[in-house]
Amino acid sequence: MERSSKNTKISTGEIEIIANKIEVLGKCKNILPFEINTDQEVREDLRLEYRFLDLRNEKLHNNILLRSKILKTLRDKMDELNFTEIQTPILANSSPEGARDYLVPSRLNPGEFYALPQAPQQFKQLLMVSGFNKYYQIAPCFRDEDPRADRAPGEFYQLDFEMSFAKQEDVFKVIEEVIPYTFKKYTNWKVDEGPFIKIPYKEAMEKYGIDKPDLRNPLIIQDVTELFKDSEFNAFKNKTIRIIVVNNGAEQGRKFFDKMGEFATSDEVGAKGLAWAKVEKDGTIAGGISKFITEEIKVKLQEKYNVKNGDSIFFIADEYEKAQKIAGLVRIELGKRLDLIEKDVYKFCFIVDFPMYELSDEGTIDFSHNPFSMPQGGLDALNNKNPLEILAYQYDLVCNGYEMASGAVRNHSPEIMVKAFEIAGYTEEDVKDRFGALFNAFQYGTPPHAGAAPGVDRLVMLIADSQNIREIIAFPKNKRAKDLLMRAPSKVSKEQLEDVHIKLATEEK
Image (cartoon, rainbow, N blue to C red; front, side, top):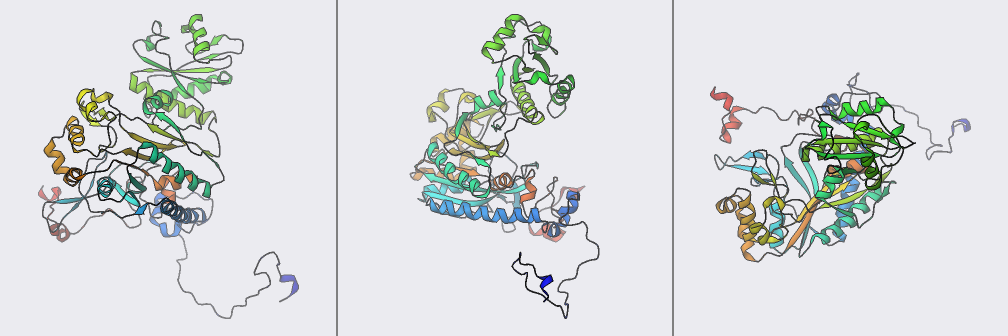
């Protein structure tokens, strides 16, 4: 080997290989469906159809390796905290847990169906009755939901865990131990450490307009309904009025305010309009609805709502719940357009005190969260309070605007269980029929228990700083919940359907 060909900067720099023979072990077509490891934009449907090639892409490949490391870290940490890993069934029973079930017909039991578990909810509670005081698993969950950028269609994974003789704070301590540790191990961003701040659901909706607030965004929603109760501005009459104050926002030009108005009135947001005004550096009110802001209102805005010279104010007026939702979306959009989101940081919080019930679209009482949660105030609250005023020991972990985990202190009393479901329209017989195992188990001395389930896919997505959850799943489905690689779902033969005693409705026409 000549001295000129040496490269001492690499480990193999003094090795020269001379090929005498080439043997092709796996032939490749001359033309690839797309270039790998380039910046060239490729249609996602094509990438998903040829996922085995797309996974050679360095960034995507590293995401899958990262996922593997994170799963090992989660397991190691849970083992360190003396949790026992236990697998629960995939073929289970149908249970009303917030989404449509995936049903699996039974060949041996004609006309009967399994359901793929939306979560191991009943099984983990049964494990608590069985004396396994600290359970966990990386659990597959199946929900027939519409896909989103942060939600994989059909199936997802969660770090499911449960503890006996535990209260809400005990669950928080486990999350505060496991989640920041995992984040810090795989990122150089700043990571919040526990204890995380706790925000009641009602406060979250009032201040952020959403129950998964991004705390990197400094903007806060404030209520000014009382301040404008005598306003002559027709759009404010008999409405809930929220404002968002943007520090130094008066420097924005008219085009910015018009664009925000277009955003607010889009079909996605649904506002009738977005009123605004700005306080100039000299203190005068200008633009938008400035003529409806009297000197008295201006003084109160300054004293009570921290409006300063140079600020701008956005007004959202609508029915109570709609005003909250619109204000929440406007807050998020303002944070993005004004580049207010704090960078390179993970901010966590717990949302607590969720309402136990809510009104359905049909006007009936329904569970707002997990139906197996313990109501605050127990049986007395269920018997004597307005259902819509009952709070539950339910909580979510939120990170950077994403719901990262959901959990609750569980109901372990058969009497409370029957009454809770009765308020939601179920009879005692319904409870015994649909949740027979759990109801029966509760008759045999059930310890108080609580738990949570951080979402693994979303956790990996956040650590990888990916904007799409499909980028951290080896074989994801597309926006239509289709697996373009394996061509699923697909039609099956008539013989297969007959085996499981199913006849398609289209065949009867």
